[in-house]
Image 1 (cartoon, one colour):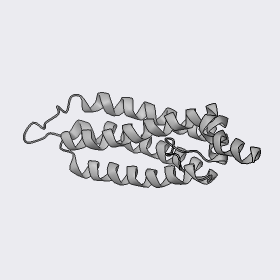
Image 2 (image 1 turned 135 degrees about the horizontal axis):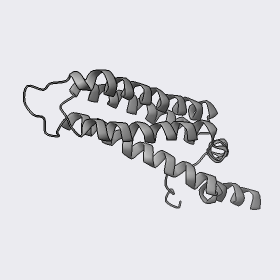
Image 3 (image 1 turned 180 degrees about the vertical axis):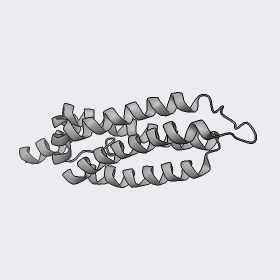
Image 4 (image 1 turned 120 degrees about the horizontal axis):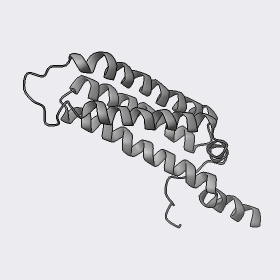
Length: 150
């Protein structure tokens, strides 16, 4: 009985689990925000690609919560792939964009937030690949928020 209680509360109270939750919550917020900002910049094709990237990463987050170590590694690599793609877009494609009409959000702020987003996701991908706390939290499995009592 005591062993069952220890296992029940271990995944919600462990500091590594709290750290893993914050990394995942940051990803959930920033990934969705990037797709929305691209829509407001009227870069619709890139917004669709970012949304597909985000949906695939949600599947990896679900695996991360269910004790699958390959999902942790996959999500870290997926974040680094996003950084490489956004840097390619920022360096080679954004300077050549001349919209016929001004978009809702000015194209002048696109390089600013996209470079900050890339730095954040580069750091997040490195943390997912190298952090022992996230690795241990993934071994145990964790919930993003406490479930209601039964």
